[in-house]
Image (tube, rainbow, N blue to C red; front, side, top):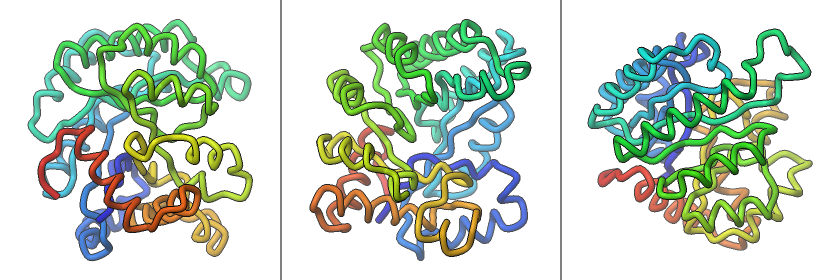
Length: 265
């Protein structure tokens, strides 16, 4: 069975059929899903979903895009939520410089993002949970901060950095997760990275409702992504690594369960 280690079912794109869609996951070979929060509110929703479905788990945290206006009260609320038994990580947290040139007026300043990241890394250390890292066009700054917390366990979700940095992340004992982006025609860098990483440090995800993999993306235009398509990521990794799809499913399921300390399927 498959473990989609990063999917946002709190998103409004799922409002029309969320219940029906999630109820169908087991019959589509999806055994586990982890829903990370991006704000206090979506973290609370992630927990409610995890309470509703046995195969769902949650992470709680504040995404760097929402750094502006974060208060100590918000961090304290994330701390409270982290105590829930179905919360398995602090995330998604990190740095995002992508929008600086595109919409600078609404992009949180770098120093503000770094402050929030460090605050949540400290929280993860205090509560003993792993972290889910969002790193978008902030590779050097993000990794330099992560190295300050080498005692933590973490995963870089939707990895977009270099092979060299991936190797350094692995040296820390961390994991790297891949999305449907690796199925796109220009994903030559991703192939080289995956070919050179140990399977024991790789996880798979959809980042739903975004990043719909091929061929679904090509066949139907820009459709909503969901865990129904996580098998495409496993299939692509199997091709890159010269493994069977079943082997990739088994190994990434084991990796995800180990990372998030989940005992059941």
